[in-house]
Image (cartoon, rainbow, N blue to C red; front, side):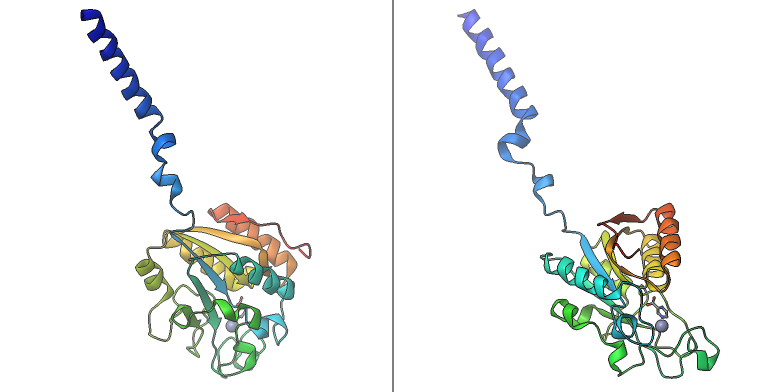
Length: 226
Ligand code: VGL
Ligand code: ZN
């Protein structure tokens, strides 16, 4: 009889060990079953007509918009935030006011409109305007504001976002500044490299090298034009 109890004890112990070791296989692992994209948002930077076919048309912009639309259409349940350069006609960055740029993305003009291909993914409250102070250049969209006056930083916080995927135009100006502000604010930042366009191809290459050095992650095959 003693032998019976010994064998039973060993069997119970063995079953308990097997249960502990293989519990994820038996019951499923809650952690890895959570959707990968749960804490992720996408930020689409300045995919606006003046940067696509207008006064500041960027290299690779058509390809960038096409790839961006394909990328966004494959997402489900991921907040998609947009930044929009939104300048008054007398903005300090324009050549007429001593700045480096031709007039672009002037409020109320087609040049400041989001590309039609990306419109299906736009939610009004996730559009962040920037560069609307005539005296202030604002490449980063992180402190841009939506119609309700909330900044991108505030909205990302409310949404519980930890990972941000950045795409858009231009690599070496608004994409870089937005990505760097996100990184500084503590987000894990990934750039989808086939969804970029630039003012200057060498500037694009240099900006990517610098961003990689800072800890920004690059994914997606680069567009062949670069
Ligand atoms: C941008 C130049 C001037 C950009 C904005 O979106 O990268 N570049 N304003
Ligand atoms: Zn601008």
